[in-house]
Image 1: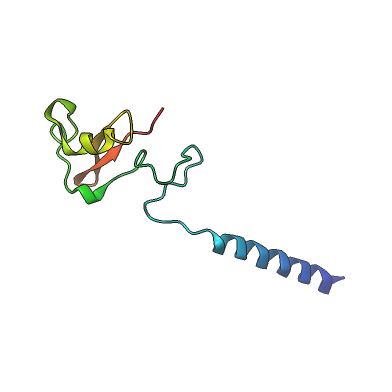
Image 2 (image 1 turned 90 degrees about the horizontal axis):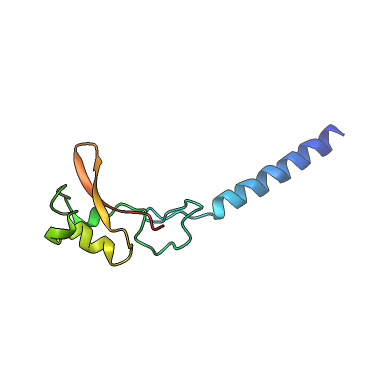
Length: 95
């Protein structure tokens, strides 16, 4: 009986590990359940745009690079979000 319990536990553990191992998470993918489109730029940071200057790069009146980039794919645009000692462009979540 003890051997059977150990075997069942081992099989369950192996199945769980295989399931966890098969999930690949890309650094730019958003795995939040409310985000359905993985290719979307919304709800994400975009460090590839470089340094983001608040009030300039996120200003729609000044045609800021962050705002301009985000508004093409997200109706709400984007803003310069602070991360530590620097700001990075973050596109608002749609909705």
